[in-house]
Amino acid sequence: MNKIVFITGATAGFGEACAMKFAANHYNVIITGRRKGRLERLAGQLVASYAVEVLPLVFDVRNREQVLQLIGTLPEAWKQVDVLINNAGLAAGKDTFDTASLDDWDTMVDTNLKGFAYVAQAVSKLMIPHKRGHIINIGSVAAKQVYAQGNMYCATKHAVDALSQAMRIDLLPHHIKVTAIHPGAADTEFSMVRFKGDRIAADHVYDGLIPLVATDVAETIFYCTTLPEHVCINDLVISCTQQADCFYYDRE
Ligand code: NDP
Ligand code: 8X3
Image (cartoon, rainbow, N blue to C red; front, top):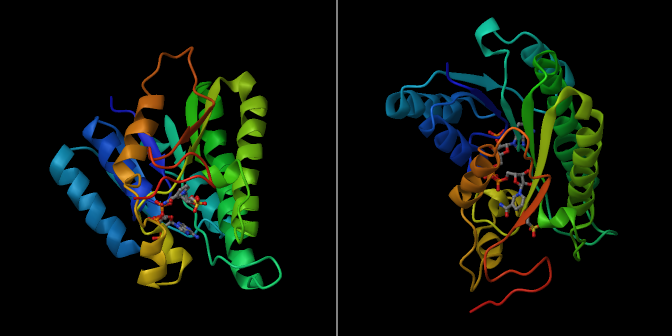
């Protein structure tokens, strides 16, 4: 029987690449996000290319009732989730602490912190009865360092780091692995979202770099799930070779 992976934020970037990678490796895939059309297209592609089962679920991770309702009432055949890729998230804006938009702060806290935690708790409840499962939380290099104008984004990603540690401790008796993956600059839709469609600002992030691409991160996540049952990568920072951390880049 195929294993099951549950991926949030599968309509783009890392989540979409993970859906392809896991489906190619015979996982049945629960794909989620807000953009229904994209989920449906991806579902069709996964079924056609890999002959796996796909369950698309359209929801906003900020909507607590919807998260709990949809995950709490998964069809019987989908309840035994083996891997959760808790990935949905965003940066909104890049402004100094005193000038940042409070709406942007709310969006990031509600998505990257609260929504992230709602999904993890709901899926962990499905894993506990089976005494197995693997939760992959997507943090960032911004979970490890704070950079100028990164204020609330960095705070939410530091919270992902803290909650990953918390989950690892509290879910230990239930034999659930918790891996936090912290990518550096990766060329996905992330920067276009952060800069609200400003293509020049978005492209500027990757000036002179060969940045990570989504498949680099998906390959790494998949690798973490292939290790023997008694081995868990707890915390992993991955960046392109031209990036040392949040501050040091070797741009061409
Ligand atoms: P993308 O913008 O390409 O993808 C983000 C995904 O998150 C989309 O599928 C989007 O789906 C989903 N999403 C966003 N908000 C919500 C919401 N409220 N409810 C449900 N789904 C939501 O970005 P990435 O793939 O790059 O980002 C994925 C994760 O990786 C994020 O947590 C990001 O912070 C993190 N990250 C990104 C890095 C980068 O440089 N790209 C580096 C380090 C970490 P939809 O809009 O359809 O809802
Ligand atoms: C995204 C990477 O460096 O823009 O998390 O914060 S960074």
